[in-house]
Length: 52
Image (tube, rainbow, N blue to C red):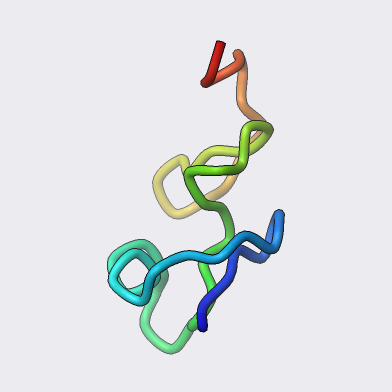
């Protein structure tokens, strides 16, 4: 099963298929990551909290 490289949380195969580059099975960041966000082809620190 795919899991987030940042926090280790489970992600669905559909999420991994959409949000990872070809040939990569595990996304670099997921919706459960409060400290990181996807920014184009990069991952960056969140500028503000996403869940308050």
